[in-house]
Image 1 (tube, helix red, strand yellow):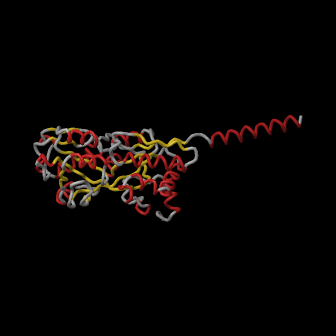
Image 2 (image 1 turned 90 degrees about the horizontal axis):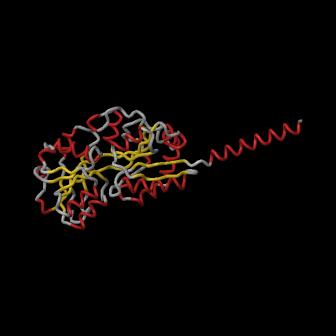
Image 3 (image 1 turned 30 degrees about the vertical axis):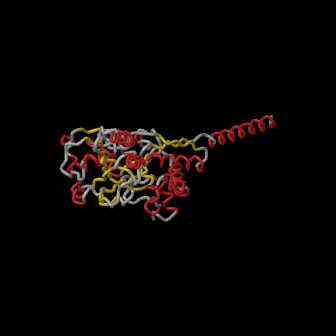
Length: 319
């Protein structure tokens, strides 16, 4: 009888051990919500997926193309993804529940992982269009980004501050970066507003195909936006072919956001391995080279995820 009990106990312990091993080997999905493939979010998302696939045990990490901002935030709130890139003003709007910005309800499950780089308002026109100032956009055909995207929300804010309504434009196109550029090449569009990191591939592509003009956004217009997320900055000379001088514009910070349903351990690993593998991000796009751990929680519009907070405490970033 004792022998039978010992065998039964051994079998039970063996099954428990196998069960824990199986649990440990379960795939850890990390779906990173980005934006269109011609922007900066997508290559950064791909780089993050490479970091996580290599550094987080059993991670199955992927970068997902999305329409950005409103979609990314709503997917995060619904737990359909583990991480998303988003503009600071859009994150703030989502947290507050700004219906006009596409968030009829407060997205209270959003949590912060890290600050990243700044977006720059980049208004680019075909030189043949005669557009040189914001006022010159009136009566022209302009793309403002996908509807309710971060870019489109930025366009609304900048145009309103400059005294321009969509109705003042000859045509408004709600298109992603790549499609906007193709229409300008084909002379079906005069200008595009793109909110992205410096050196975004879509505008680089356009500048090699047609002569472009980068339209300045003056400091007084930025002040009239009335949102602290919008800061005066410049697009440095030679960022794009044919752009020979610095151009004044607005800069807006981007953040990596997650949600409360992500475990503390996964959020910890996502923050830790991102900064341990930061060179992979730097290699993915020039815009990423300003991402620094010391700035990770600066200006975060939502609460930092407890898992990420644990990492930042370990490295002395949060006291």
